[in-house]
Length: 139
Image 1 (cartoon, rainbow, N blue to C red):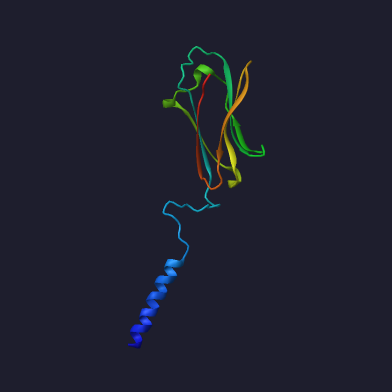
Image 2 (tube, helix red, strand yellow):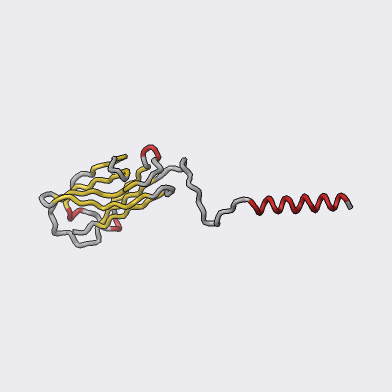
């Protein structure tokens, strides 16, 4: 009888300890600062630009919200008419330098000769490990 009581207390204790632990929803993904953060840049245009002979220069960038540049890369200047369609889009992957875990701005800066500068950026939130930046260039 004493064995049954001790066994019952042990089983109830194990159940209570197991159910009292902090639980997370099934879709919870903990912020893992060691997981590499990857940005995928995709450049394309679905507009008819075949008659636009203007020149455009694109810069891919990963920046901190204070404006500090973590990484950027300038693409060779191209004719606007040569910007690829979605089917043949330009695709670049870059890991965030230093695996910076903070809120970042990622995207495209571009200059059209004799017109000016503009940009397309999106936030890369803390805790996110993958950001896809698709830029559909419009003229």
